Length: 254
Image (cartoon, rainbow, N blue to C red; front, top):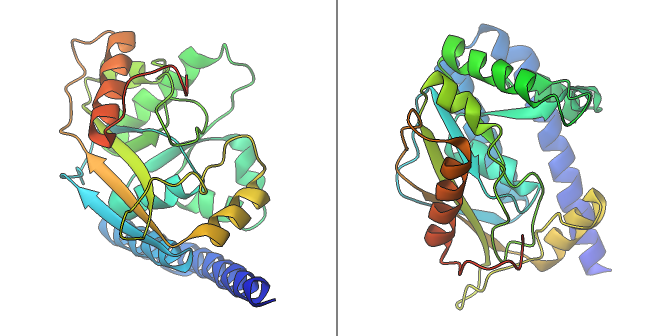
């Protein structure tokens, strides 16, 4: 019973926090400068992590000004909050996500780049859209080149298609490695936060049942993309992320 009450309390706090985010989008963002928007988004994300009992640890220097393409391994729905708490990034999302209740409003107001991917062969148009955004907005765009979430015990194969946007625009790429640990003296790696092979609701319940956590973010130095082939760059970024996490290269999560 106590656990259920605690779960209900956290879910209520998260819903109220989502409503606060919607209020910020409605009242503050229309007249705020970009720097003010970045600060509000960062604080909102950090507060949200605290609600879910996640402590943030950052190692290295996250770049805070664009243009920049940010890539990261993908473990959990928490990843978006973690990245927002570290850098003022815009994410790439399918346009249908903009129609989600409440969350859709937050996604639209946060500067998300929407792409209408009618098919997986629509890559060239999507890459051109991202490249145009990087060139014209001088911004920071983040995506997960694994294309799916993993268990967090390793790093899956990186798909290099979206990296062509950085190469075409001669924009640097920064690799961020995510690693979730239980906040215990031993700090073992946790798979409870994973969003792999389960639905969103079950993932949230698993996350709430097993915390508290430490979300570690390792920041590599940005890499100039101009002279890279996208497949080689994808492989190099994956290797960098694995080294920062202390992983052994294997096919376990591929």
